[in-house]
Length: 204
Image 1: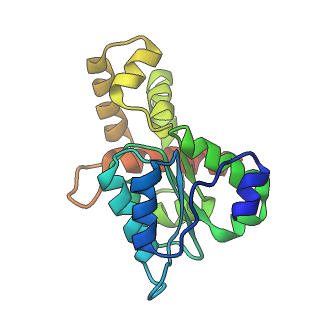
Image 2: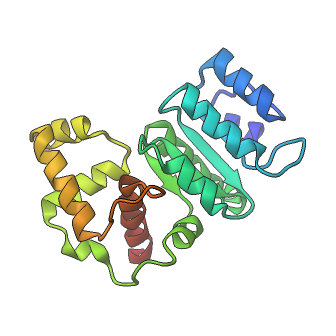
């Protein structure tokens, strides 16, 4: 992994083998992005993803790209739940395609969201097969696209040259049209982004 990253122009400030060392390295080096395996010693179960969540709590918005052998739906949702963007979740097979992996890494480092198609499929398996984005207006699509890039309402307002209150109204309309009712365990902003990404995957 270190050789792959360095070959594509990245500087690896630290390569560690467990969650404790990961958190210390993030505190010490304040990296632009952390690439984290879901499973780390000693139990090789969920130490890595828990460390990634803790790192994001310590440094809100820290770009994190998670690598996993299988889709861990609960943790994938939790990782996305703060709605801050700068999150990636890829299956390890994607690393074999160096260009695809590096593109995802750069997208996450820039504050965007990079989700493995299989992860999206799993998270949205219970949702309708029709394209829910058809119900959105062009402006609502613009807002949702910028939301998927990890932008805040303030940043979206600045980008579209509209008020932040207008963004809030568009966002509320998006949630309604995508049938995203408020629940304790669901973050509607995250689910809206996942719906958008899923639509893009289906389109091609």
